[in-house]
Image (cartoon, rainbow, N blue to C red):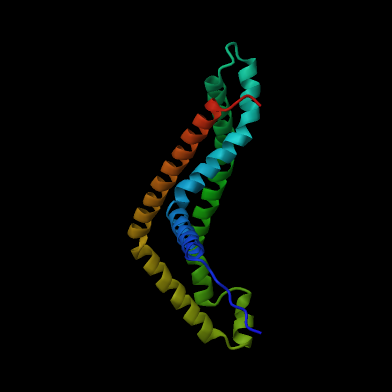
Length: 182
């Protein structure tokens, strides 16, 4: 038994239009991914900061959400700054100490001194260790030569990150001062 299915031209046109619209929407979303992420982060921060802002604004004389938001920002930035002040100096100090001790670690392996010497000799690992030491020195030299380009890209990434953080803070501030008391 043969079944004949008839599809109207309008149905095909609607299907193609929906498919093209979906593809265009996906392309648009992929192009706008970074700004959309910034907006989502701002919205999340506004939701998280709305209860403290509402509480602070109810305590202020004129119930000003602008001042309440500013006070909340100062408190949050103070907490984050305090955390960073506690964490960053020891991390930097330990990183510098490690960087200063790396040459002595390489010398120890190169001179084959210390408790690892018996193990290396017993299993005949001298060629592999010598190769690894040479490779480490070559990589250190390459890293030293590439430090300028690494620094430039790091500064660029830092600047981009700071602009993104500033954008998020401004959008969050605007969302909070226009938000309703919760």
